[in-house]
Image (cartoon, helix red, strand yellow):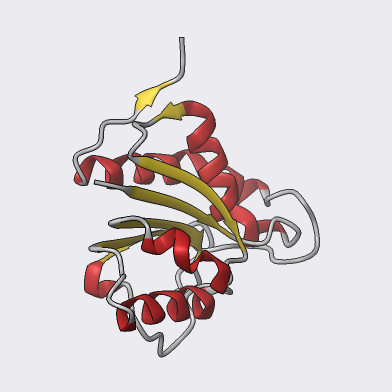
Length: 160
């Protein structure tokens, strides 16, 4: 079983980069078996097609816009992760949507897709997350761990 944990976001636009930052925090604190790839997908483009196609399960971590208050965590699975988005949940959702749709057409889509997100507060230019959103990173890491456990993988803490 191959699993891809894909952090998405533009780290130059404050909270827009929270998917990448959550993935980095997960990768720094937890180890996973070789069957799990942890990747910084940045702003995700069609060049990610082969990478996603080479995994049976996708866990995407991203900023999402749901209309909920900033800092709200969101986990969507399966059919709840829209294949063709009618309204954008995330600033790069269209890119992820296009990738998943292309993979479905080619018969190479992952068996399962989970989206772990957090509603951003600030999307201005800057390398730092807003303090309110940075405080949500541990909860996002726990959501990644839970998604991996749902797939039968037990991450190991790197803490001594």
